[in-house]
Length: 230
Image (cartoon, rainbow, N blue to C red; front, side, top):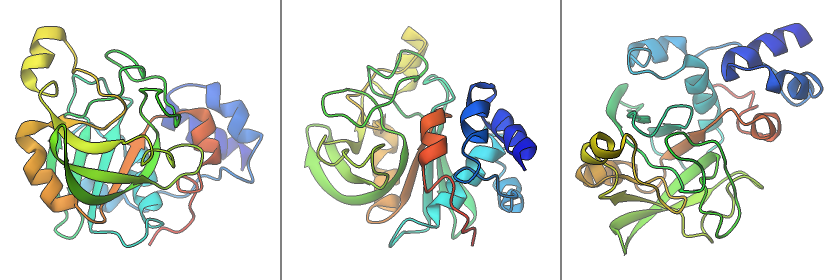
């Protein structure tokens, strides 16, 4: 079992730094057989650049999100901000509603996000599972509040005013001019052109999963290590 655990972690993270931590905590981090590959394949996520292991983690963790709508948003922070790394999935219709850009916090990194925090004024993105809440009009216009569901990783986002909103620095022009998106204060900012479509669909219960293979997060998250798969 330890050998299988190591192989799973290496495949997921692309590095060996997690191997020591996870094998030392085999009672916490147990690889679960991939049961979502038919849905992954039917959604065509391989051609859209989403790792099947990331989708599997998102799918299994979503089962623990209370009062959820059949929409799953996956922000894959292993990809650069110049890539369309936000996947908005309509699970009722089994379609990809949209694949688009999403920004990370300005102190999480430049082109690549590598640093994550749950702390106030960190200006960093928080990892983990969120429940998308109701709308309000803020400095970026129509926005959706977010509730972080993972203690110690993102449960402070509401107090930090981390929300889902559109931003003019999240667009093709910014990528073309600078090679990357602009940065938020930790919010998962999306293109203004897509804001209305996304927010109207996911408001009031969709699940957002912000992923990066951080060893501490992967070892401690009860959502990532959920055994419930249906």
